[in-house]
Every structure is written in C-alpha cells, then in structure tokens.
Image (cartoon, rainbow, N blue to C red; front, side, top):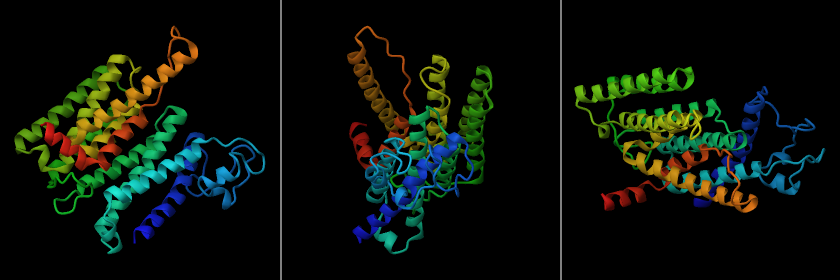
Length: 334
C-alpha cells in the first residue's frame, strides 16, 4: 500500500515538476498558451518530445543540453523538480493518512490536494524569486485563495490543516476577516503614499480589535480569525521593515508571501514560523558574505541582494510538517 501511494505521488511529481518550470518561463516571457502550449527549447524553438519532458532524467541523459541545438539547459530546472518531489513525499509522509486515502475519504483527499497545491505554487514563486528577484502575483494569489478555503472549512471534527484545530465561524467573522485581508492586498497593489498605508493598517487593527471586543471572540474560536490576525501581524512586521529601510531590507512582494505564511500557521505557530524564516535567512546571508569576503578580500563590500521568498516559504513549510514537535517544544518552554 505504501509503495503504491508513493508511486502515485511520484507520478504527481513527474507531471507537476516539469509543468512548474514551464509556468515560470511563460510567466516571465508572457508567452501565450501557458496551460495548453507545447513545451519547446528556448533557443531553437523546437517542440520537445515526450522523453525530453521526463523530469531530471531527460536533463541527465542529455548532459544538460538541448538534444538538437546543444544549447545549455540550466541546472535550476532539475533542482526545481527534485525540490517538488521532496515536498510531495513530505506531504504524503507527514500530513496525510494513507489508510484514509485508500478508503476513499473525501476529506483526506481534499487535504492531500490542498497541500500538494500549496507546495506546487510555493515551488513556482520560490524559484521565480531565485531566478528573477520577483514574486509572480498570480501564484501567490492562488495560494492565498487556497489558504482561505482551508480556513473556511477548518472544522473541529476534521481540520484541513492538521494540528491547528480551531473551528467555528459565522457570517460576521467572514465579513470582517475578508475585509481586513482585502485592505492588506489593496495596500500592496494600489501604490499609495506611506501616510495612507499607515492609516489603512491602523484601520485594519481597529476593525479586528473592535470586532473581537464587541463579539467577545478570541483568536482560538475561529480558524479564519486566527489566520487573519496572524497575517495582519506579519504584514505589519514586514511593512515596518520596508518603511524604515526604504525598501532595502525587504521588498513589497514579500508582503504577499507573508500573508500566505500566516494564513497557514495562525497565531499559535506564527512566531516559530517567523523565527525559522529569519534564522535560515541569516545563516544563508552570513555564508554568502563570508564566501564573498574570502573570494574578494576582507575590505570588499558585499552589496548583493538575495531573494527572501525562499526563506519565508521554509518557515511555513517547516512548521506545517513538524507542527506537533514544535508545539511540544513551545509547551515545554512556556
């Protein structure tokens, strides 16, 4: 049964790993036929055969070159496919009950599709950020919609996101939370002045605080409310870094991923996810600085930018996969 299940995930990876690299290229080039167009070599424009589309193996057998024009194919593509495979296997091992999958549980199938989709869009924006130092709006927006869907259906008796079992929801909770999230997106997309941005953020705080005070609600009463509070908290954290550094410490694209990160981790695991992304980011940053100094001399100035999207993704992926262990550590210390 386990062999069959992981074979199924392998087939998923084979399909979506290659598809993700195609989407990344076509988002960047704005090429038509993103979902239906044939894959082709970017240099000679020849359509690829079925064997040339096999993830990793086709790149290895062709020695990282196009079969016909011999142009170099970046190693980032097989790396993307390996990461996709690892994440799909991790979903199957840590987050899915395989017995329920084979018993045909619609809820467990929904959970698996949700997490596989989140990992798929995460890989797209992470590698797009690595390649182009930008975040594609479409992939993060779809992932945020999926996260909202999970929060709306996060029931006590069968949570979509395991370990975060807050349930209960009413129409006013939905209205207030969607209003706050819509305002955060408006701040990111409208290009307002700093004063207007600050006033809108303050209004979001007042909305949530006023609703919770008047209704007597707590973040533990509703998955959607907990996710929205966490998303607002990290938005403010990132927003202040952008504001105080003049956009040097962080970019506006990171705000979109920040919302996704805390919609998935909620108040209870928001801080650990935040800490993980900064710890990993700091380690990589220090390593790159040391490498640069060794290569160019101690007096040389390191003025390169590195994408922060992969570190944010590592924060919420790590928390989702190891939530029980992290909660145990938090309970021990607190």
